Length: 266
Image: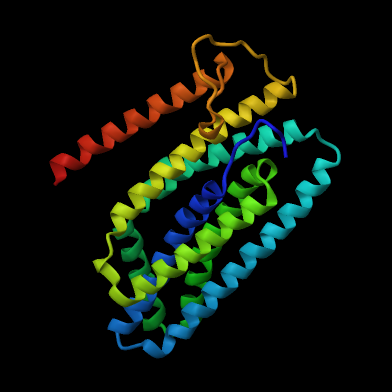
C-alpha cells in the first residue's frame, strides 16, 4: 500500500452498507408482498435467488481480484491506484446521480410488486427467484467494482474490518426491517449513506489524481495556503482541487434543482 493514501475501514463499510441496503429493500419488499398476498410458501424462492446472487457477486469479486493481481505485476502501484480510484469515483457519481436517483424507494417497491404479481399470476415462481437474484447481483457487482478502486489503497486488515462492520450492520437492519418494516426511517438512512458515498467519491477523485501525479502521469502545481487533508482526499495542487471543486459545484446544483422540483409537488 502506498504511503500517501488514507482510506479507512469506515470507507469500506459505507460502500457495502449503501449498496447492500438497496438489495435488502428489494428482498424485504418481495417477502412482504408474498406474505400479504397469502403466498408465504413461495418465500424460499426469494431467499434462494438472493443467496445465489450473493454467491455470484462473491465469485465476481474473486475473479476481479485475480485479474488485478496479474495486472499489478506489470503496472506501477501508483498508476493502478490512480486509474482504479478514478473509475470508482465515476461509478459512484453515476450511480448516485443517475440510476439510483431514478430508482427511488417507492418506485423500486412498486416495480417489485408488479413483477411479483405477474410471476404469481402465471405460476412462474422461478421468476421470483430471478428477481431476487438480479437485485442482489446488481448491487453486489457495483460493490465489487467500487472495492476495486478502494482495495489497492487500503490495508487488508482495514478492508476486512470494513466488510465485517458493513455486513454486521446490514444484518441488524435486515432483522429490523423484517420485524418492524415501514416503521424504520429508511429515507433518512438513505440520505445519510448518500452523503457518505459522496464524501467517498470526492476522496476517490482527489486520491486517484494524486496517485497519477506520484506516477508522473499528471503535472503537479502546488497551491499555497491549502492544507493537505489525506483523510478527505484533499491535496494542495491545482490538478486535484479544481476537479473536486467542479464536482462539488455540480452536486450542489443538482441537489438544489431536485429540491426545487420536489417542493412544489409536496
